[in-house]
Length: 458
Ligand SMILES: [Zn+2]
Image 1 (cartoon, rainbow, N blue to C red):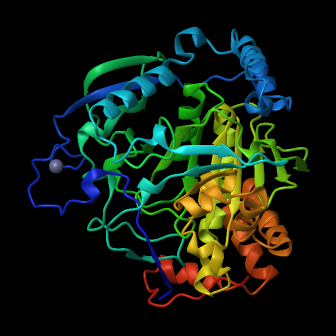
Image 2 (cartoon, protein in one colour):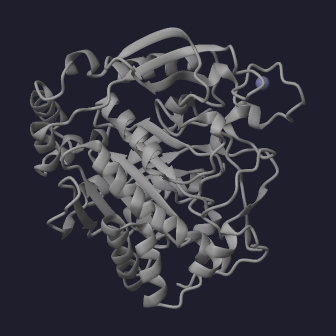
Image 3 (spheres, rainbow, N blue to C red):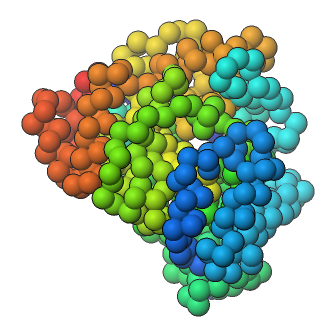
């Protein structure tokens, strides 16, 4: 078995406690949830018409986070009014609610450290990488053996998962409304398996939260169209260009195998949001979405831009992710532009690390290149790395994450097949195209027979 020792990051206080039988901790498990009352935010399914579509897809939307924000915020609000019914009621409400609740938890001392005291700087240079010194994020816990060679692994209720989180860490539940209105209830009976938004007790920025879809379904970490749509809805509801959601697959620095997204506010553009893109698919049949690839960026990635609606975008992205999962290719996802733009980064850092191919200097920093780092917000754990950080050092780290051009081209082709013809078609093409191991490995994993796994071919 391929394993790497990693320093675990705590995302919840209950992660540190041994779980007793019988609970009494007001947790999110089936022991404490039936009959519980939690705050509830209900959202309307977004009816995005052509006008809203243009606001996202005319190529200007990503400039909203590009510096002259006041102007672009104003323009986007102007455009969205009249296209989204009741948008006045919804605009920014989730945003202010989330931050008010988050600050309340900070006042209650529920975080492990004060993230607002962490030093941050924009590294000089053309890309604007952002470095943060976060010495508090290290866990004193014994490093856990973490399996890095399987993107899909079965859920294991014995390991830490979000049903063990305390209810005080929940900001609110997040559900689609039944009557088409946005509402907030301070105390509402919880549904059978709610979507919860909880604090991350080891935040890396202001407002750092976790979205855990259907917490009691105990779904392992994997993308499907419904939960991806939920994440897009959360981004659209927050309606703030500085609020992004991120996803890490297993093997790409997810540390908990229980379906979750992360989200936080960063009041600066992520370098990846400013990177140039080249269209690779002009006439998309599915809802007018655009698919592009990143250029002049250390990590190869695909960019999906919204067309007619969030559903088509969610389906397209999810199909590409399902292909990556089935092909056992670790990946990270960034949701930006109020849910209108999604970046997918297939990555191979863990594989290279396991093979001893990553530069020791980079390993010594103990930086985990997950979605935020890849997007250009680099959380450093040691003072010496922070003091000597440069654009070149950030680029060197991220370059280790990226697939080679040749492998990326192959993966890109299969992702497009997955988007337009389904993930199964992409899988069958990929075995014809090459004799890669992932297919065999994945079949073994699905059959629950995988005792030993092969490495991905580079
Ligand atoms: Zn409990």
